[in-house]
Amino acid sequence: MKICVFGASGYVGASVYDKLKQTESTVVGTYLNEPILFDDLYELDVNEPETFSNFFKSEKPDVVVWSVMSGPNEHKLTDQGLMHLLTHLTPQTKLIYISSDFVFSQGNGPYSEEDPLSHLPDDHSFSNYTNAKVKAEKLITKEFSNYVILRAGPIYGENAIGKLDERTDKLSYHLSSNQPIEYRDDLVRTFVHIDDLTNVIEEMVFNDVTGTYHVGPEHEQTLYRFMKVAAHKIGYDETLLSKSTTQEEVDAEIPKNTALKTDKIKTVTKQQFR
Ligand SMILES: NC(=O)c1ccc[n+]([C@@H]2O[C@H](COP(=O)([O-])OP(=O)(O)OC[C@H]3O[C@@H](n4cnc5c(N)ncnc54)[C@H](OP(=O)(O)O)[C@@H]3O)[C@@H](O)[C@H]2O)c1
Image (cartoon, rainbow, N blue to C red):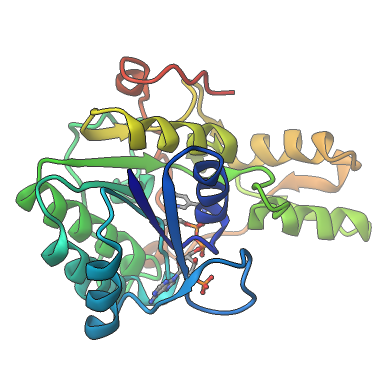
């Protein structure tokens, strides 16, 4: 079996690539910008139609893990990169697409897989990412059946090459220099550990499960509570953390509760979420 991980230099992609490399399958991965994290990755801009097509036709993967992300250019990644991919997939190729809890941008979770997705107004600071993810899911589910969409809330922990998620990294930077830091206690999320997500992706590569699943533990947490525990785990003084008092601008409000109901995934995976 041949597996292709697009975005193998990213936080999630690197863990997935590293894990799949330890199996007996042939695994290829792509990066866009240096540094090159693994010697054998291919440089590829998925938004370039010709190079994408040449790469895909020469590799002919049986399974694709799509782990690319580009915050401000997420729309381009869906309208161009993902569209290039979708035009090349055969019915036999399995697509594993990593989506986000932000497809539920109304923020009145917890949400189940069947709940309707929502858009943000174009001038909202998260609209590019959120609306691109919603569009991507709709494109995939409309055209294909051999797919797995995994919706994740914030992903945390050290990945396979020792990189921490950005939130914990920032926390560690502040606390190591004894600087106080504030977190919102009104943002509710389902936080998922990178190793748990990576294990699920590996299972999905090799099984014949398809459909849309929420990944993560049963419990949800506020950002403040989660970061407090994170500070304790990395051995810093958690008293430097406090609840944020910053007022949001009404038109730019961050979705409050995007927690995910995660019962469905338990029926198809042996993974126990921490
Ligand atoms: N991190 C989270 O908390 C979180 C939460 C929910 C869902 N997700 C989803 O998980 C997936 C992976 O996220 P991540 O945190 O691993 O992101 P990341 O660390 O930013 O990695 C993004 C990857 O995409 C690649 N990339 C960006 N633009 C590209 C292009 N035009 N052509 C080819 N490759 C391109 C990057 O390549 P270079 O590094 O070489 O530039 C990198 O490998 C995304 O779908 C994201 O929406 C993440």
